[in-house]
Image (cartoon, rainbow, N blue to C red; front, side, top):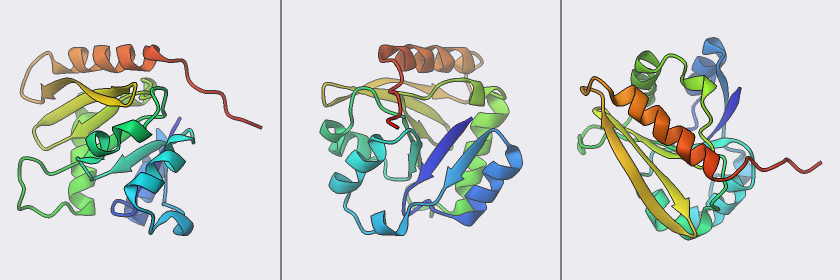
Length: 169
């Protein structure tokens, strides 16, 4: 079961509760001592852990690529792109997560290690970081018939790039 580390903007008890009820992953709020850190200070901290990092900052993987190790627990961006003027609320974030879960019901069985996902209203983008550079692997539109198999193939390729790190005692 995956653990999702929510960032300051996505840290919501509603998301934590929704994950708990679903039972396929846990979400944890950002610890208070990390809430006021700038991305340049926060990213190295969350990337040393084993939890996927959830944020709505779609610029983060490009701006902080040098801070993201090649082998990482994964990052999930939830954005309202291309609807730039619609506020990204917690209910909207949950709806966007729901789109992936409805179309890929066994999502929780796939490793998101080394993957950077951007979930939008219209599809999901996937990328990874290699040697401090963000590499875009593809965008999968929900309207395409075969997107789930192509999407899962890219996830598996990225997860296999580097073996998961062992937690230190």
